[in-house]
Amino acid sequence: MDFELTASMMCANYGNLEKEVSDLEKAGIDSFHIDIMDGRYVPNFAMSLNDMAYIRSATKLPLDVHLMIEHPNNNIHMFLNHLKEGDTVYIHPEAEYHPSTTLQKIINAGIIPGIAINPGTSIETVMEMLVIVKKVLVMSVNPGNAGQMYLPYVGKKINKLLAMQEDMDFSIYWDGACSADKIQTYAPKGVKGFVLGTTMLFGKESSYADTIRNIREMRF
Image (tube, rainbow, N blue to C red; front, side):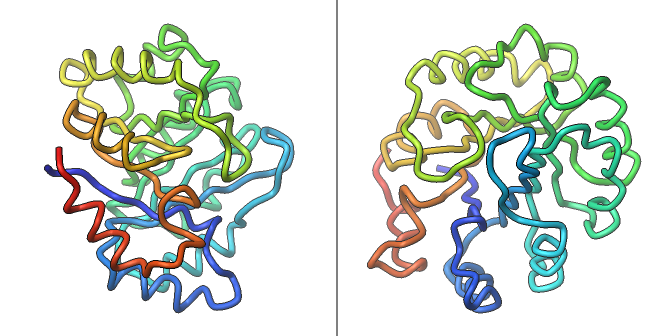
């Protein structure tokens, strides 16, 4: 079963971030998920531009940058300047007056464009953007904090997106409360990747290598 695993770095140990990046690389993670929060679009502050830039310099693996900030178009260049081909930037359509303008800047910079869809965001409101983007990050929890409960109605939204992804040429990624049963259910259906946070990867007794190997070896 071919699917991607990305590490939610807001959950990492910042006492030794260099080791965290190195250990996750050696464990077989596919990419690093960077949650940028401004305390306005979401009621929390998380990673910063400098955190993102450091991780970009510390690994050759792709970064998935999730911008949970108001009006990302105002400062998108600050993030794009630190990224490289193969990296992704997700924006929330509700956070921008004209999200297609921001997405075009991401495309022009040679970065993979993506949108993040909150649990309360309907597919119909982002239909036009699905034609533009290459990745759709489906939030199974309300954004802003790690360790939240899964909202079960999100499954129906993912099923709708799965029926559309081939015609519109985008891939679907799962973010929030990602447990083994979610991967076992949705990877076979066509969800391309899963963001791993405190539910499965961070703060556990088992090593990153053991955890990731166990996920790869799950029965489907």
